[in-house]
Picture 1 (tube, rainbow, N blue to C red):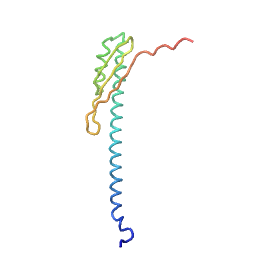
Picture 2: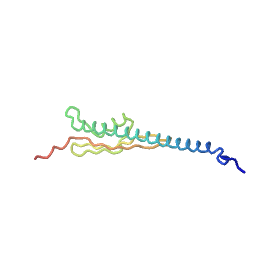
Picture 3: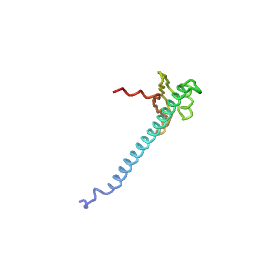
Picture 4: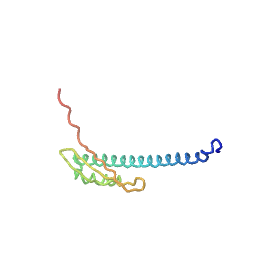
Length: 124
């Protein structure tokens, strides 16, 4: 004959371990998401700055030069490398890659940016 509650003895420990495991898995997942978001932000910032610097060189009267070379230098200064650069008219389009580590695994964050004059609004 069993005493009341005898069958559930020790189940609190098992439930506690389960809750701890779920919380730990959630913490690891959230950490990975934060690292990925940070890397993406760095890549976007590097792409924006590289494209703007390339467009500035392209439109410069005082110190003209190669916009893609300038974009590469600015991207490198921001921890990125230019994977593609194109000039179309007065627009400079840049793609960059930022090496990063997410949850201990090497990854690459990529971003694209375009800089140039804004098209004039259509006449009414």
